[in-house]
Each structure stands twice: as C-alpha cells, then as structure tokens.
Length: 274
Length: 354
Ligand SMILES: Nc1ncnc2c1ncn2[C@@H]1O[C@H](COP(=O)(O)OP(=O)(O)OP(=O)(O)O)[C@@H](O)[C@H]1O
Ligand SMILES: [Mg+2]
Image 1 (cartoon, rainbow over the protein chains, first blue to last red):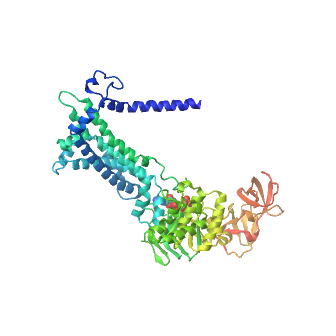
Image 2: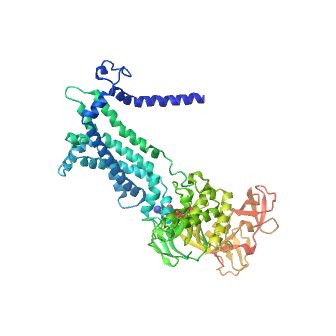
Image 3: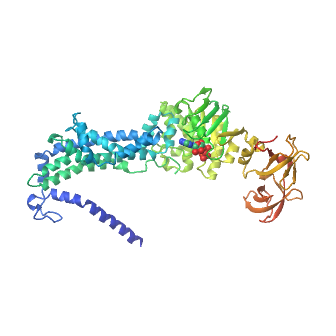
C-alpha cells in the first residue's frame, strides 16, 4: 500500500515537471531544427536532423551578444543595488521601533498595487529631463525602485526569522550593533539574500515594458527587446529567436546554480533551544 | 568584578503603564542575587536594563561605581546567559566561546588558554569543533555558560538559564553554577522561576511583583519572615496557607471565622477587632491529636518523600505536608494544629505584623 502511494506521488511530480518543462523543451527543439524542417516536421518531438546554425548566426551575425551584455549589466546592477537597499531597510523594519514605521510599510505596499503600464508615461516624463532615457543607468534606477519594496518585505521576513537574542548576545559580547549585524545576522541571512538577489535578478532579466519604452536605440536594448528584432514585418525567424532564447536562459540557470546552496534553509538550526 | 547600584529605576515602554517602578537595590561585590517573581513582573526587563539592551526610563544604574545609563552594552563589560542560549549557529563551539575575546583582539595564545580552561571546567573539550545544532540541550547550555566565563566580566547576568533543561540536568547544572560562583567570585544576578534554585543559589533573594520589589533578604529571611502576603505565598512549595480572622486583643489570639481562637505568643500591637490574615506553611501544620481545628480531606497527593494533603478547613482550601505515611482517604476528617511560633500574621494591607 505504502509503495503504491509513493509511486503515485512520484508519478504526480513527474507529470508536473514534464508539464512545466515542456515549453522549455520546445524552445530547445525549435532552436536546433533546420529551417526547412520547421514546418514540415512541425509536430514531431525531435527533428530528424539537427543543426547549430541558428546559434552560430545569432552569436556571429546579430546584435544579440550586445543585448545580452546590456541585460547582464542591468540585471546584475539592479540585483546588487536593490538587495543592498532592501537589506538595510528590511533590517530596520524588523528590528527598530520608529515613528512612522507603519506608514512606511503601508507606502511600500501601495507601490505594489499599480499595473506598471500605468506608470510608463509619468516615468518617461521624469527621466527624460534627467537624461536617463535611452540609458542603462535609467533602466537600473527604475528597476531598483520597482523591486525594492517587495525585496524589502522579503528581507524583513528573513530578519524576523532570526532571534533577536543572537544580536543582543553579540552586543553583550562586545560587538557594536553594526558589528553584530555584519558578523552574526548577515551570515545567517545568506539564504534570504540569495533568494532576494535571485528574485530581483530574474525580474530585471525578463522585464520588457520599461526596456521597450525607455530605450530607443539598438545599442542600449536589453535582450527581451532584442528578441523582438527577430520579428520582421514579413516573417518571424523562429529558429534564431529560439536560439537566442536558449542562450538567454544560461545566465539565469548559472545564477541559480551558484546561489542554490544558500537557498537551502536551516542555517539557524541550533541557535536556540529548539 | 564590581558592585551594582540601582537607584530609583523605573521603566515604561513607550505609552504603556510602567513595567518597573522605583527599583532600589545595592548589590555587593561578588554577591549572588536571585530575582524571583511571577511571570511578567519585570525581571527580564530589569536584567536587560543592567545589560544595556533596554533604555532606562528614570533613575540610574551604576556598575563598579560608574553610572552606565548611557553606555552601550559592549562598554559595560558584563556577560549574560540567555534563556534561549542564543548560540551563534554558524560558529563552532570554540568560536562561540571565544567570540568576545576575538572581538577584543586578545592574543591568540591567551584565547587558546582561556578556551582550554573554560571548556575543561564545563566538560566541553570533546565538542569544541561542533556547531551548536549538533549538541544536546544540556551541552548548548554549557556552551552558553562557557561564553560568559571565558571573559571574566564585571558581572554575570542569567535569565532563567536552566529552565529549558530537564529536572535532573537542572539539578546538576545548579550545583555547577554554585561551584563556578565559588571559584570565580563574580557578582551575579540570576532570574529564575524555580524555588529550589532561588533558595540554594542566592546570597540574597529579591522578590518582585507588579514591577515593585517586595522584599530583599537571605533565602531563610524570606522563608521565615516574609514581609507581606505576596512573598509569603510566593516563597515555599507547596505555598503557605492563609486564613482570614480578627485580632482579639483580650485573649491575645486570632479569632477565625468560626470563632475558634489561635493563640499568638508574640507581642502584638493591634486595635481589638482589626482584620488579620494568618499564614502557616503546609510543612508546619500538625495532623491528628485532639486539639486543633477540624478539616476534611479533599485530595491526597503522595510525592514519595511525603504526602501533600489537600484539606478543606472552614470552607477554605488548606494544605498540609507530612512525611508520615498515614493512611488517609478523601472525605475523611482530621484535626489540624498550628504551632503558635510558626504562625505568620499579616494586617489588612497584607503587611507582616511583628
Ligand atoms: N517591548 C515591550 N513593549 C511593551 N511591553 C513590554 C515589552 N517587553 C516587555 N513588556 C512588558 O513588560 C512586562 C515585564 O516583562 P518581563 O519580560 O520583564 O517579565 P518577566 O518578569 O521577565 O516575566 P517572565 O518570568 O515571564 O520572563 C510584561 O508585562 C511585558 O508585557
Ligand atoms: Mg523573563
């Protein structure tokens, strides 16, 4: 009976994974399908002949490497800046009592309520006199602004999960408040920081609306916008587009591979009685 | 090592009613003070104010003659053992214990020496390389103690350090704390809920209630001469019995509600007929015999060492403790006597008389 239960459980997970990963599989499949087979063998699971021609073209003859570099710059800068800000703000929200704390939390929440499209025009108006339109810096500023509130709540909840006793013990042991934060709290928040960085990075990496509206030149475009350049007036080059998509997955995968060991919870085990 | 002087200290958390009112306490160098009181009476708050973790609303706290109100915890040179132990989970036992020394940039050789001495004293040698999560509750507790004793601070603060341990381990650690204190002679303040811990460890006990110090004295002082009804009821287990009555100046006795008289030997200066409360500890109640008052047995609780009898006396719950394995059953009636020299008398305000 138990064995059947386990089997059903495994099977359910397997079905779910297959379902979730199928689009990705299709992406890979199309990216290696030669153009002449794309339509003739449209519904086959794997083409009878594969080619890396699309990848070669995308890397050597398109602007894709440029888009890729821009995306990398913007996403890394955003992830770093937003997580740093959110870390400090989240710590303050978690540990200090101060006037207007509720208001601040409330306002942070309010910023999450508007659909981004509504804000594109006012933000464009704000950024353009500052010379921040059509610039990666401008994009980073906007992304940081939009990601900090949620990242802040995320970090706050991670700090809330660390007993206050720990930093108080450190302070009695002779650390300053900042010292206790750096030596005791920060190492214990690494999983939280990793999760936040990952979240912000992917959000910035795949963002489309602002990238499309604020950036006008090809040299400054990020890759989601760049992908659109494979759509011409008369046709869509699916093979190249999918190849670009596969390449765009690489940094996200690498990134999560890097941080996954911090995502594993349980670093605070043993701090308190438990 | 140092004295600690607490002068007219009060504490109110922003906007709330005061948690501590006008606390005055002078702690001598090397003294072991135990704070007792019901939950929420402000023991931890007082400890945290001494440690510098909580701001002082009014009054002054001086450590070693120096007022520390505005000093950060790290400048006060005190060590604290938390109820939760608060071990640093990402550090090994050795790193936990030497964190304070390393912060002070103590030379490596000295650090190693002190770690070695402390871990030997606490029997932690075998665990130095482990992380706290790989330790048992008792071992974690030792590490928390070790973190404090490597420092040789001016004073030790303990906030219910043993309350998470089982009874046997607690007994063992209690003895060790006693030994440690004898060896180090450090000024210590120890918060506990445990009667036995308070009685056995303290040089002086401070009994608190509702943010106010009720009595300060040696353990036997508090046991023999409780200053008021609160202390009388709080110290001792099972708790003291109380019976309401009136002072009969002519008979030099207390008249209970059924008009029976309990003679009192001491000289007492009270107006005739004033309301008093008589207190007697369960262990001082005599059972059987002819004289005394009639009581009915409600419940019999054998403890192995003796028997706790839950009685009903003049419609009041009344407890007696006896080591006599007398065969008593519920509903049975029994005569109880209260020796005159064991009676505690409290006036209408609940304060001790004579
Ligand atoms: N940060 C706070 N804000 C408001 N009130 C507080 C705060 N911390 C504690 N109190 C209140 O102060 C009172 C004393 O708390 P404290 O922790 O000192 O009690 P305690 O004597 O240590 O109790 P226990 O034996 O349960 O540990 C309690 O009534 C508590 O509700
Ligand atoms: Mg407490």
